[in-house]
Amino acid sequence: MVVAIVVVAIVAVLGGLVGLLVLRILARGENAHHRSRTAELSARDIPDYFDSTARFAVTATARVRTAPEDAFIALADGRHLESIPFVAGSTPIRARGQVGPVQVGEGRRIDTLVAALGERIVRAEPGRILVLTGTGVSIPMVLESFGERYTIDEIGDDLVDVSWTIAGTPRFIGFLPLRWAAPFLRPFLGFFLQRGLTRGSVEKVAG
Image: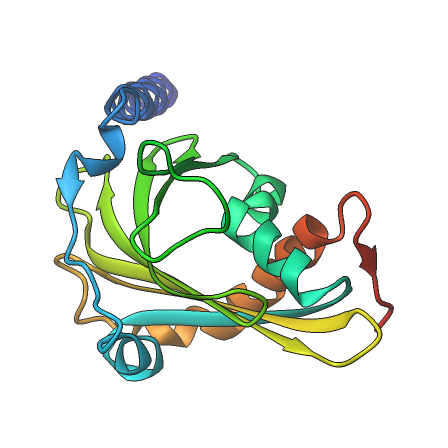
């Protein structure tokens, strides 16, 4: 009996390692983030998607001492994502010769331990709002759609409240009430947002 349990445990571990290796292979490559395309959201879809139609959504907030424009740049660069475990960060995908501030249509790639994701900006108001739609993911048949929304509210004296909403609809299990998980994930998301935006010269504001 003990031998059987050990054998099953070994097989499970080996299966997990093989699965992880497969995911890592799928996440590699210049176009890995578009290996499996997802439905893109238009600017008109955004309000309803985040508020109701996405099967999952969670919003976190952080108060940081910085100028609204600087917060916007940090969010667009994906600087806060690097504070999340197993996330390497994001890579801007700009049109050839494009310089200056981020623009609608500009893309970025997010690399994690097990997946690469593609996003595209659908709304950008520097210092105020940044909205991105998902464009693809390296793992086939996982996500139907996803997106991110950031809002920046200036309080005064280089003090801002930043709100970060992540929303998505998975394939196959989209019928589950996934929004119920939001209260459990919100504190962690808020922690990483705060941590990512308070690195360097951005000062954390005590609660």
